[in-house]
Image 1 (cartoon, rainbow, N blue to C red):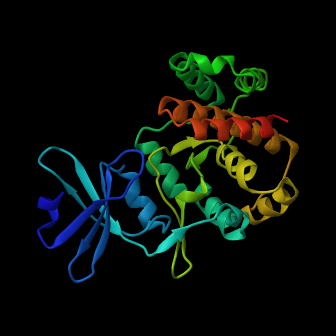
Image 2 (tube, helix red, strand yellow):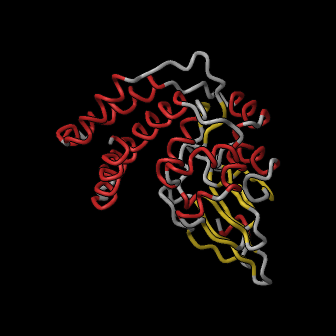
Length: 261
């Protein structure tokens, strides 16, 4: 990475689960966010103003692709800030973007169905069989199987699939971005809505939040949101368990019980 930019740049790891992201700073103050092998989807996200501006893309001799984005001064959103209308408005912009959907479809993404999600969950449970003995996990699996549905009549959209508060970046000039798009899929918008509302927004505020998003609350939407929230929690529990992160597993298990009630 140093050879790519030159000696005048200092490069430090940016953290994250993949270890493929870096901060780069030039002596006179220029700063970039670098990532190895980002999706070509990043260019459209940048053009739409959803992520910080893409500055350049370079291919290394190894075949790896390095992308450089503007390094934004700012902070991640606090959990309580997820109720803010601007979060609903940005997610709505993403879900209603034809450009994003067309690009992701061209990259080979096909609509993710609840059946696909159930298959992934059961395959992962084969790698973490001890979780099957947890009462909350067993109840969640039964619920998902009993309430699995089709998306044949659903207008699928680009879903971020990890609307955690630390993926929302508020710049110092008050511009909101949604970052870390490695897990983006084409799916029912209830996938993103379920995780965000169940995890962050008091249920008494759901109708108002959804009005800022631009849709009316319905029982069908709430049923879908609950299904996706439970399925995502199971996936997170399995992921943290395989990484040996016991505190995160316990926190997600507690949240799973709350959603199931």
